[in-house]
Length: 155
Image (cartoon, rainbow, N blue to C red):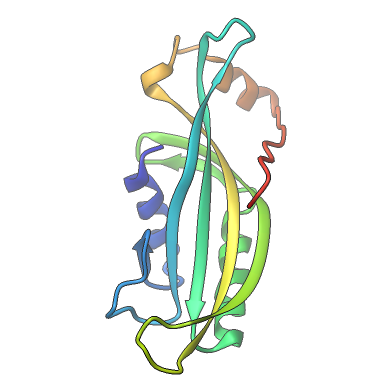
């Protein structure tokens, strides 16, 4: 999946600063860290690519204030769970699969604790590199309102 399109979508929501993959030392809180955990192309039974794929995207909302982390996480969930739209070159459909909360010791060597709200989404998207035609299965499924879950289990 095009990670630039994900960054553009997340920053367009203007809910918090957005960082890819890791928390920078100079982060502003609350903030969002996003990462792509996997991206798998969809195939027919005979392994022909159909022009769609499903990515697992993990969001982590981080703040020293648990109520701030919860508030921002709730806003991201409201904006993204069930989202359908075009971001740059990617048409996507977001579906939350898992949500959790944890406290972590901020890696500054001190006693600072951070509240982390994790959200994991399956993002069904077009896959232009594997597209077979302009009348792809993705377009047919989207037009008919087809929907299915892609739960993959979480470690």
